[in-house]
Amino acid sequence: MTKPQAGILLPPPPLARYLSFSLTPGVPAADCLRALCRLADGERTLVGVGRALVSALGAEIAGLRGFPTFAGPGLELPATPAALWLWLRGDDRGEILHRARHLEQALTPAFRLDDTRDAFLHAGGRDLSGYEDGTENPIAEEAVRTAIVGADQPRLSGSSFVAVQRWTHDFAGFERMPAGERDSVIGRRLADNEEIDEAPASSHVKRAAQESFTPAAFVLRRSMPWAEGGCGGLMFVAFGTSFDPFEAVLRRMLGIEDGIVDALFRFTRPESGAYFWCPAISEGPVASGTLMGGRRRSLGDRSGCPSTGTRYRADPGAGGPAGEGRSSGFGNPYFTR
Image (cartoon, rainbow, N blue to C red; front, side):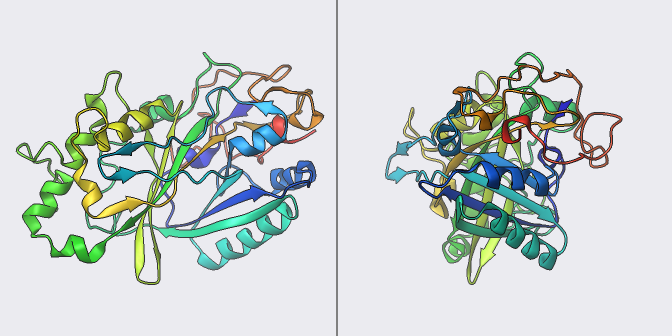
């Protein structure tokens, strides 16, 4: 039986840590990945697989690609690919620290830790700019349809694709703007979070309105603020059944088609960008034909794996398929024998 990693559908936790790893050349990854399977449950520790790791294992995932190198007027987005991405969720900073240490130890020597970023909830879910974040996020069954690949794609069913960016804010520059100008940049009033009908076409709300695309470009956002020293911003994390909706919004924000650049870039810029695939979790006996076998195959090929077709719900108490409890562990067949 397979189901999504529960952390995708749960609300953002009070505290989080993001870990990005690269591969150590010449070191087999199989043993370290098996150790990861024992430590990651998909809820408290969520796993994303990068294209470099998939290629190194001689596999393929339909839909997984490199982060786009889009550029707009005076703007160029950075691409910072990683082999493996872990999202540690929790409510105790010390516990997250030790969990991260143990994960890094388990992944050594096949993986090298390249970046660590701590994040947190702020003011009930607001960005550090003070404005509410993710106001158009889908909920309940719509969240599942947006983020989780359905049974119509049995080789990928229960998995998800995630785009990750680290945005750094220019707090001083934003604070120098008059309050009304800040509202116009966002396209919402800070006071009541209402959209401003007369906001300029460059306002973020108008550039990124997901329902205004054809087809609609909805993603499930699980972004959280980050801070280090006097710097900070947003860890933008968006799950979907493909990267197409994210890229459609990104193109418009950059003004690639009409030259109108999102005003958000006036006070914040992305400093990283990477794509990952988040495999479904398997319960019960693991099927044969695993990733470790060395045979080149589609990572989404679930030959011999049961495909439940189960409906999932974005319910903080559910943790997976409706009526089931917590995950028994991160046991995706493509990372275990």
